Image 1: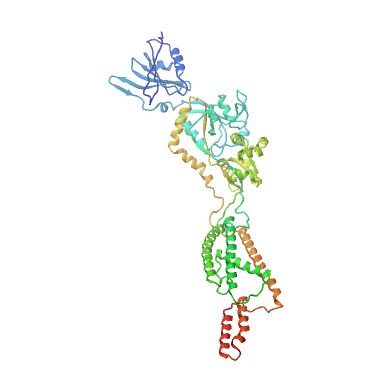
Image 2: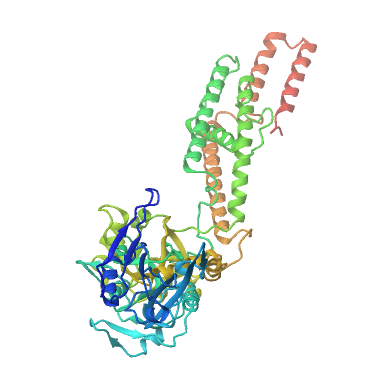
Length: 612
């Protein structure tokens, strides 16, 4: 009969600290009693191996041993033959492996593979799999699903079988590799409600609830790694990522803008140039006023309009110096008469050349490049626009992210404004959402960017206005403490390390990110920017007209008293002064002095740019 087993715990060094269970048996023992003991001492997911040492533990006898699950690491040592066996049951088959033989003075290993490698063969075990469609990870025809009969599970959930369904995508091709390497069969179905799984009032819904109720062995789909879900399910190593974003209708090649010629510099820069030009004008006018008080030449009195016209001319000359205006020749400007003014003007033109070079380079880029402008670049900016935010049904985790957001944040404001009372108005799927998006220019679609760009027919009609900087990871999901999880994960890691997953990712995702809907690069001036040029010319015309009016009406008051001088005002006043003082100073008889004075008058007249 079976003797009471002795369990020996041997503590290894603290840095390792595993435990080894030893079960010593008499010559005759009952296998059922051993099975009871092993079940009490081997928990699911435990990495502590157990050893059963006895006699008559032959291969044939172990095949009659009660069920030991594939994940239980239990070994048998026959003292008579000194052979180490392992035994487990999978797909109603008992598998016995001869691992090593203990001979005199040596140990002969019969198996060189690890525990996970030896047991990564399910021998045709049949799995029930729940799945769902999401581009570009797992893709199948939803129209075919709608035409298939609806079944009901033991818990009352409605499902649709996916037998003989043509599929594709990153996760599907990964699954085919796992199916081949692990040697199993399966039936696959999709839930009628097409929900993934959100915790509501303490209960899970969607595919997560299917796992919790043990109505499926695992989820084949792009399940988002989530902290709350991880309490009831386990994930394989991440296979892909998803990026949430806001998609809007493409605004077109370029937007109509009257400000194209102002865009190379910011508003603050333009304001600074104007203020600087006004300050320099004030300084130069002070120089002119100081110099005029020491000039014996009598000044002609001017009315306010004429003074205002001169100020506008001088301001325009200073402001245009920033953009390459040629300095006026000697005698053209009233503000270049003195050396102090000339030094200041030289510095102005030197700084103006620097400003002009920067402006010219930026303007060339602005006019020759196609720039797409988006209506917002953040969720805070989205809230301030008149865009309506929508999404599709089934994306419970997305809506849950909005609902659980902190009060006052942009996510919470979007949920309160668009989702809280309108959950029943969400689009049934992504394709329907995109169809309505391209029809409504003031609609924003919140979804997974990789999935949205999978619909190639809409690639050139939409644009990503905002995307998160924190993408989520995706993988397959298993029930908590699944006996098959460690073997699936082992094969998944081998698949990833071999580089095959990178090839699939490039095949299904990279082309969507590198889409080219129109030729990029330099292009000629578009009509929109030519219109902005007309606006610039119109502004210059208005400025010229104002100066003309000020000059014309400013001189009207003096026409009846004095004829319009042929020379500039300052030169004319000097000529009149010399003529009046000439008879008194020299007399008419002094012919040589008179001729010398006339030579001065002629020389002065030649210097005038507007002489007749």
